[in-house]
Length: 548
Image 1 (cartoon, rainbow, N blue to C red):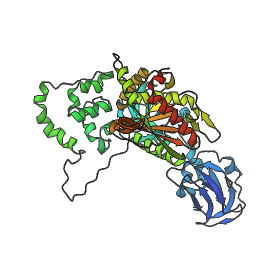
Image 2 (image 1 turned 60 degrees about the horizontal axis):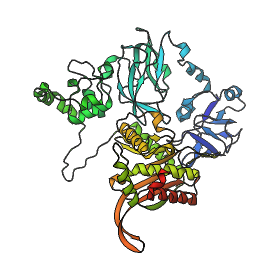
Image 3 (image 1 turned 90 degrees about the vertical axis):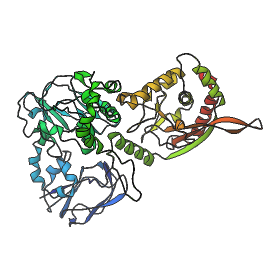
Image 4 (image 1 turned 30 degrees about the horizontal axis):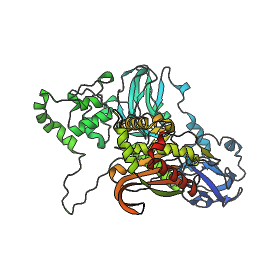
C-alpha cells in the first residue's frame, strides 16, 4: 500500500524546507532508516530518514526547490504500484502526514478523514465563531475574559470576549445572534487564529460532534457551563476569585480593572461598573472610595480571600542558602516580541553607527517653546521631528528589504517604542514629516498613554517606515537597538549628559547626547547611514532649522 511522505518539520520555527540533495532516486529500494534526502531548514541542513520501506515511486519536490511543511515530498510503496491518483491529490491538506507515526498509515484509509464540518453541513442557524485575526502580526490569541457563558442569549454587536493579541487586549463582538451553545477556548488559554472559539445557534440545538470534527487537534473544552468557572489556570487564581460574588453571580470587569483592583486590594464586588452591562472599567476602580463596607471587609477577607490572593505572591525575604525560582507564563506580546526580534537579528545584517550631538541650543529652544501656554515638547519630540526631516533628505534610510526589490518609502511614518507592562509596543505617527513639534508631542503622549492601558487599535501600530527608541529618561547614555522590521533602521536615543567639552579651543561645560543608528546592510550602506546621522545632527543642534 502506497504511503505519502511529506515535508517534515525539522525545527520548532520551520515553516518550509528546501531539498538540498536527494540520496535516492525513483525506483530505488528503501529500507526503514535509510536517508532519503538532505533538507535545508531555517536553521541547518539535516538528513531526513525514511520511517517506511518499499520502493521510491515518486519524488514530489526536486532538489533545489522549496516547499511548505506538509507538502508532498515523496511516495513509497510496492514496485509497479499505480500512484497517479495520489499525485493528483497532493494539494489536499494532510496535516497528520508531517509526523513519522502517521507516515505509516496507508493512504487508502485516509478517505475516512474527509468528514469535516463545513458551513454547509451545519444545522440550520448554527454558526461557528473562530479566533479572529485582530492585528497584522497576530498568529494566535489568548482569551482574557469571557463576557458571556454557555446558555446566554447573544445579540449582534454584543461583546463576546476580551482577546489578548500580540499588541493589545481587545474586545471581540459578535456578528451573529442566537444562544451561546459552546465555548471552545477557556479563559487564560491561547489558540491559533481560526481555531474554534465558540458556537452560536438556536437554543436547544444538538451540536454533538461539531466541535470535535471542526478542530484539527481533537476535542476541545467541554460545553458544560459549570466548567467555565473552574478551567482558569493557576496563574490567574487571584483574578478569577474576583469574577464571582458570594452568590455566584459573575462580575464583568476588564483585565486592566482587575489588575488595578488586585494591586490596590479592592474587592470588585464593592465596585459599581459604568461600562456596558454594568462592566467594571479602569476608571471605576481608580475612582472607587471604600465606604462603610470597609469596616466589615477585613474579617471576610481574612477568612476567604487572603489565602487565594497570597498564593501567587513571591516571597519578600529569602533566607540565605535557599533556592527559589519562579515561572511567569509568557504573554502573547512577549512571545511575539521574542519571535520578531530574533527574526530581525538573525535575518538582517545589522551594523551600528554612533554620533555625539551637542544639546545646548536644543535645551534653550525647548525652554522657550514650553514657555508658551498649553505647549509641552520633549527632547524626544525634537528628535522625532529631526528624524522625519532627515528621512526626506535621505529616503534610502526610509526603506525596506524585499527579495525582489528594495522599497523606498517617500512618506514618513515614525514608530515610537513604548515600554508597557508586558513588553514593548510601537505606536506609529503617520506622516510625521507633516506634523509640527507640538503636534508630535501631543500625539506621542496620547499614543503612549493608551499603549500602557492596552487601548491602542491595531491600525495605530502598523505601517512604520522608521523607528525611534529612547532610553535616555532611564539614564542610559548609549545603546544599540534591534531593527523593527520591515524597517531598515532604528535610532537609539541616549541621555543628555553634562560634561567638559572643547569649544573654540577652550574646555567648557556642555551638554551632549549620543545617538546610535542600527542599519540593515542589505538596504543601507555605511556612507548612507553616516550622511543621515550628519543631517540629523545638524537639525538637532540647530532647532530653528526645523521650523523652516
